[in-house]
Image 1: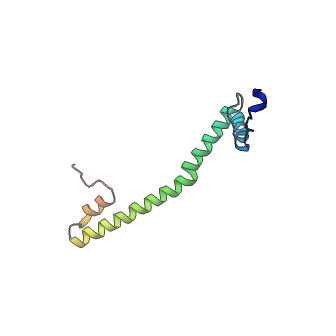
Image 2 (image 1 turned 180 degrees about the vertical axis):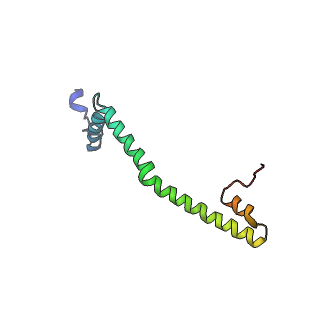
Image 3 (image 1 turned 90 degrees about the horizontal axis):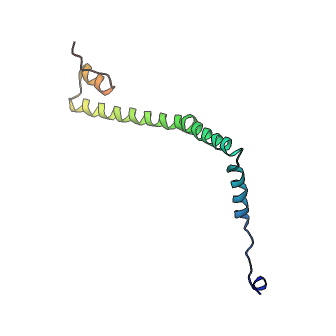
Length: 97
C-alpha cells in the first residue's frame, strides 16, 4: 500500500551537480590538492592582481589628501619652512643630537 501511494520526488539537476562537486572537492586523494590550488589562486588574486590596483589607488588617495592638507596649511600661514615640509612627507623632524 505504501509503495503505491508514496511518491518520491526526483533529484533535481542542482542537487546532482552539487553532489558531483562535493565528490571531487571532498575526495580522499585530490581534495587537499584542489583546496591548496584554490587557496593559491585566492592569494595570487589578492596580492598580485587586485592588491596592486588597490594599493596604487590608496597611495593616490593619500597623496591627494596630503596635497590638500599642505595647501590648506600654507594658505592659513601655519605651514612653512623645512620642518613643515618634512612633517607632511613623513620624515622625522625631531632630531636631538
